[in-house]
Image (tube, rainbow, N blue to C red; front, top):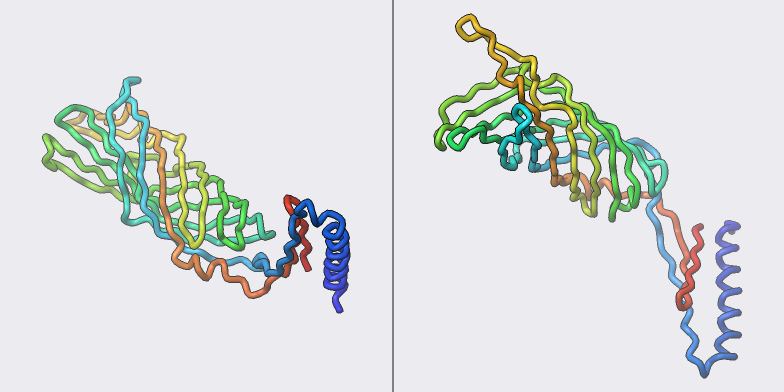
Length: 265
């Protein structure tokens, strides 16, 4: 018989003996009862595994035009935000991940009462992060890390007095930086819902961008500063299978009053 199983049984007998003696000697004082329970813990995955995620996000921006704060409103984005992560768990409570994802990020500003601008980019990003908590069981874990996004398509819409007057989009536009670094943190709960906050410290606009208008160079973003914060609610569609692990680890728990003891075997 496995030595760990024998050790666990020996501990049960010893605890039961001590409990019996205490009960006999203190029965009139209402000694706390001893409870014993058996169960199985999921074992962490030995190999790398893949998860996929769809999400919706709200973006906020701190915007300044020539040092003056520029009025802006939150922007909601539900299409199209998709990611695939490659995960490696080193234990039941710690793991790392990387992957790739497509995001629709941007901002909405109101330079004047009559003018509203919607500006966004589609990006392809590569995150690198870690996770701490119940990363195998999936009941709850915290994650954090950094990401680098590459802007692939820029789109801008202009509204005057509520009417759309002009729009355009450009592939690999110089209107924004090509690479956009960020940091993020969040948590995930069973069966696969997660909340993430992501901050972009770099200016959303490329101040050096210019175009020619009747022989004159125009710098539309020369005095603009915009830093974005994204709040993302996501769901892992393979989250149910994500936390199913075939191999289990047994445990024995004993509790008496406020005292608890656990043995794994």
